[in-house]
Amino acid sequence: MTLLRRELGDVLRERRRAQGLTLREVSATASVSLGYLSEVERGEKEASSELLASICGALDLPLSKVLIDVSSRMAESEGLATTVSLPVPAADVVSASAA
Image 1 (tube, rainbow, N blue to C red):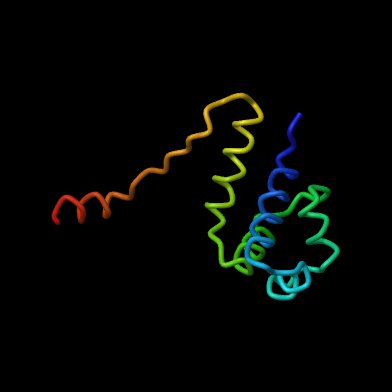
Image 2 (cartoon, rainbow, N blue to C red; image 1 turned 180 degrees about the vertical axis):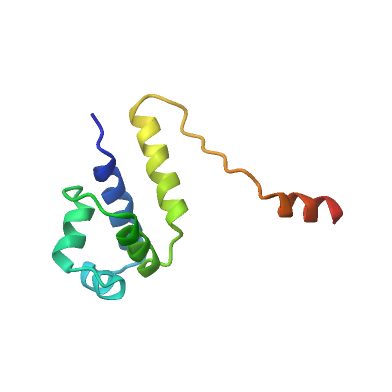
């Protein structure tokens, strides 16, 4: 069984590493203890929405993107289609059709 906290931790770790950031740098920027951030990345702790927002802010990454990535991973592990489509805000549809 795939655990949400593990997939979330994997996504956060991959994003941090892709940016060349250390745990220490992200923990300082996010105001989260180094140990706790490490546990979140390893999937050992469930992070609150406030903590996730803070970590995503330190990574300059929208929380919605992290959740989409996690959702795709969960769907794949469950043998479901992994394509996630987001609704287009009405304002974007109106401005696009006016152009």
